[in-house]
Image (cartoon, rainbow, N blue to C red; front, side, top):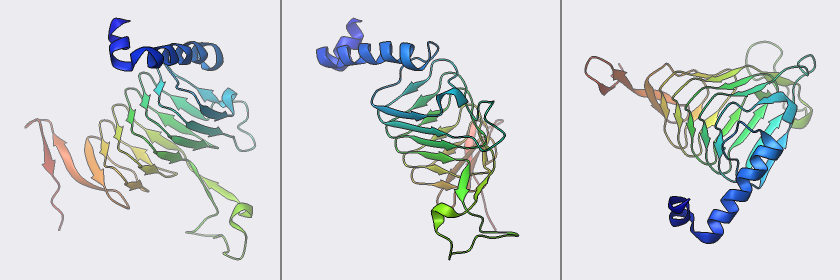
Length: 204
């Protein structure tokens, strides 16, 4: 308690205590700390995992498509940390693994307003809000770190132990043990377990 007081001060410590109490009563007894204010839609469709910690102004929209209303569509693993202003939108399936670290202002979504490739593409003459939703599952595996203002789009898997640099847009899957940056995100380094080093990816 003394170390908490030194870190947060008197008012900060009291506020932290109230947030812990509200987390246990209103969200999940298994969560560690959700900082209020926050916005949660579709509480019953969320598996909160164990020891989840968040910053302020978390926004979660868990609004399942027809036929999935009986199950969890957003699953948190254990020991996840989310920072301020994270927004997660799920209508089909988002799975976030264990020990994932997510920086502030990160956006994760498994759906999109309309379809813009392949067959039956959406018309620009249809208002965006009226276009049929397209969706595909998102998986963020264990030990992933997402930097500030990263966007993770539908149909993406981010492999175990990978790092996504700040301001990147992940529109395609990233293999395990990689560092990826940019829009769209591309792999720039991979971890070499023999050398125990991150090695730059050479591209032709």
